[in-house]
Length: 381
Image (cartoon, rainbow, N blue to C red; front, side, top):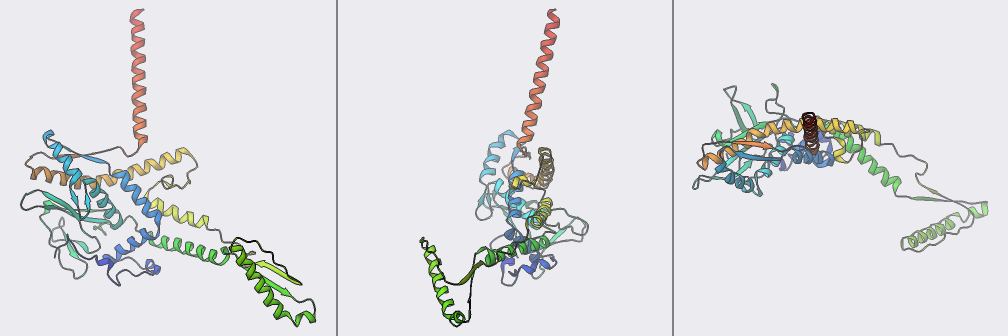
């Protein structure tokens, strides 16, 4: 059974992913069904998907540096042109896809494809985490992969050509856990609030009128039904004229009352509960709210502290990806006949670090210039 290649995604089969929102009330089990939870969660809550995009763009800024200068040009070309899956290219695209899969599912398995004729790397592929599960082998340091459906063991290429990474593994969950763990219950409440808001606007937001006719005496009461029909026709004609851009007054005789349906009711306040739910979701992902356009921080110092927390999280993700990128770069150099390896050089995460370093260098240069000037004046004296 081949894991890497073409095939239908198991989580998308009929019946594997029910559309009812109550699916979030179930406890996610290990396997493809668990992955469907997190896929639906990102699809239904756009702010979570935006958080993932911010994490990936801020994390993946790197360059492979060969320990042999003669191999650097070829390594750079390989980083720009290597095929990723069916439609992707470049090592940066692979890093984005690899990190996205790791954060969403808590585990990611990939392999390097080798062309048998040229003995060169023809591409990099990532497996669908919803179709396999990882388990311990006979050796405590060995991991085996089995299909979720059927339980058959997956045949993998030599160990030098595949890589496996887990997110936040533990003794109980050595296969790793998704970054979205714990959020489905909050997501269900949030979507229920949004659904209720939409229903309330359907009922009260679309203004409807109640026209009431009260006969003044018994003589008018005898013709109440006829006059009510006339009032209804005139009212409908006036509203239709308004839709066509013509202002038409409504004239009636007798005691006629007009009220807006639902005007006396008050819409439920949703700002506080929605913010409380979003705060918990965003805190789970360690994304500062100001990066998402949410002005929750009241001071600049608080924003700076949030940025520092994000930096530490991104450094953790980089530590997870670095061995994989280094393994791919080393494989390319070995196949090209170079005995050297490579290192991963990461760029600074934000401009605040660059600004602080530049300011420190400026202060040091100014201090050195003042000391030199002071020493020259003393020597002249």
